Image (cartoon, rainbow, N blue to C red):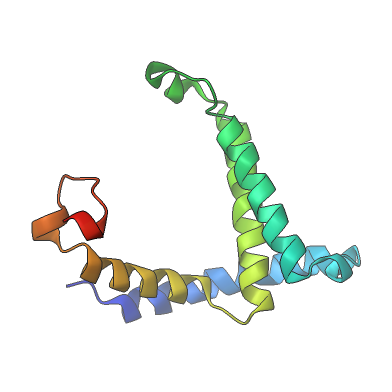
Length: 123
């Protein structure tokens, strides 16, 4: 069994450093005024679309040829907006992800879900 509390404690320090850097970057530019929940969610969605665009119209054998630098940049943008949105609502990203894993583990027990892409309602 995975001990989620140990994992959470180990990553909190690095997570807090990233959040502090994001806030410092934002505040140095006086951008907090633009970072309401709606705009952060929209920015997250737009950046996710830009991430998807890297894979658009690629055949399966071409997926490994995606520009790695662009992939890192777009993924960083998605994560940055997700972190800022979570911070705005006093949510700990790692805590909510680990909570979601716990919920999904109950919905998708290994003995039923292993090797299948079926939704939990179809298992």
